[in-house]
Amino acid sequence: MIDFADVDALFKKAHLLHGQAEINAVMDKMAVEIKTKLGDTKPIMLCILNGALIFMGHLLTRLNFPLQIDYVHVSRYRGEIQGRNLDWIAEPNGMLEGRTVVLVEDILDSGLTLSAVKDYCTKRRVKNVYTAVLIDKNHPRDPGGLAKADFTGLYVEDKFLIGYGLDYKGFCRNLPGIYAVET
Ligand code: IMP
Ligand code: MG
Image (tube, rainbow, N blue to C red):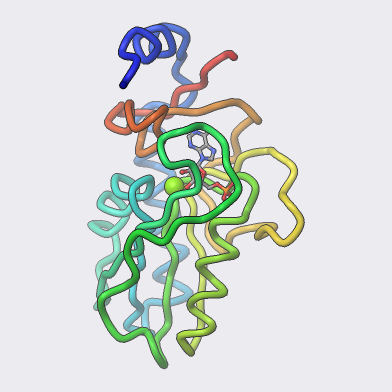
């Protein structure tokens, strides 16, 4: 059973850290960086669902060079707010072999999700794999976790965040900004 009162209570405790105008400016800058580095490579932009959905869509419209898109759906939390194991809900549809792949993710936290998806891409014999995250959370990485993304939007304090793809128990991904929740 979903505890809707719990979701309402969390929503009330959230305050805006980065609004839409600021996120737009950050994505403009990231798009230039990605184009400069990878604009000639016909990359596959691989969306890590669900969290990266919103960031991916807005980033893509800024990348005015030939690319393809694909996705993986992985979950570490399965509707909870912590957890270690990565569930693979969907693997990419297309051929990754020999391609330049950019993993697009909402947030780098422990680093385990991105390191696992990077390892997967290596096993699929991609040519190169890069990582692009909207948020780098100032949180100690887990052993084996990715230390730093190749392209980073915002560096954010170590708080529980919602909005712009980030969820609390599946809610709040739709909020048009990044909000911190005091726990
Ligand atoms: P990592 O594997 O710990 O780096 O975390 C990556 C995943 O954890 C992200 O794709 C998010 O889905 C989730 N996550 C990490 N921090 C937060 C947060 O502050 N709010 C909501 N989800 C988070
Ligand atoms: Mg995620």
